[in-house]
Amino acid sequence: MKVMLRQNTAGKLLAYVAKKDMEEEVVEQTTVDEGQILTLANGWELAIANLEEPLQLPQTVEARRLM
Image (cartoon, rainbow, N blue to C red; front, top):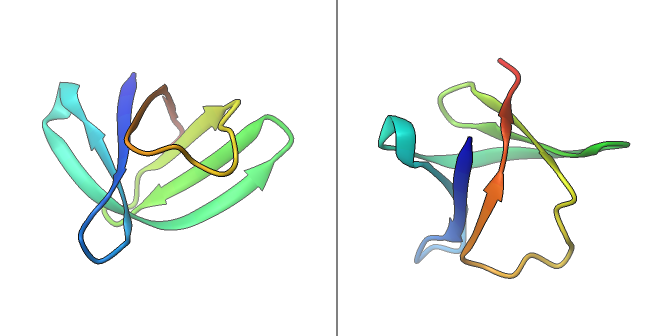
């Protein structure tokens, strides 16, 4: 699924999932061999491969929902 990553005015990372019309704050970022896992405030975990550091925001990426 397509996910747009951006920062809010407080500097927190947000993830917007257009298909679900849902925007949630990223509460945890975990680096794994395949890329990054972002945990959202609602409990969703999104796996994102090839996420470049430092993040260039806003950015649309392809993500896979784990949970």
